[in-house]
Image 1 (cartoon, rainbow, N blue to C red):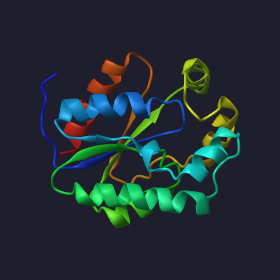
Image 2 (image 1 turned 30 degrees about the horizontal axis):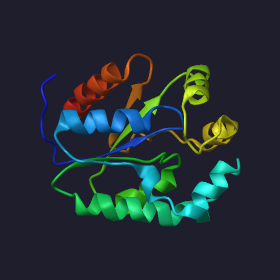
Image 3 (image 1 turned 180 degrees about the vertical axis):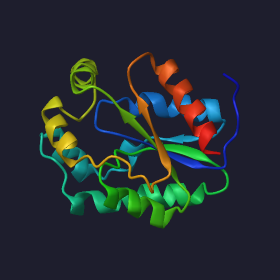
Image 4 (image 1 turned 90 degrees about the vertical axis):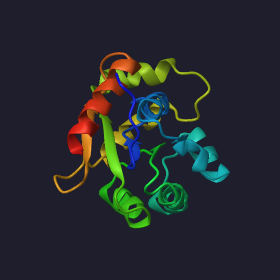
Length: 171
């Protein structure tokens, strides 16, 4: 796969366990742009809440989304990749308001596969018990939203390659 630079800021989104933290850096590398880990934008209170198995509220998420939006705005015209669950349309709208032109890569997949992957990862604060709340909250990309869906079946390299190919078709 040939690397290419992109002026877009790409938000890698999806429920917990889809591989945002794995695919994001691979995608950034292939596109020749920096990567930012969305979890690093969470305030400590959010991490504590999720670690205890309590889902975040919208009020918990707004400052986190604003911080991601600020980063994305700073990368406008330069390109970048950032991970964010961005499960609801309102969350994506908030990111777009901060950084018009962001493009979403929605990592999708079979619930059983995602749960299996979550149960095998080490050192992450998000317990598998919150997966149901993630799927319940998820609002897939609307037809009027700039983005693509990429299935998470396969190796991380295959997933990243499919994402680059699909992004290329967006222009």
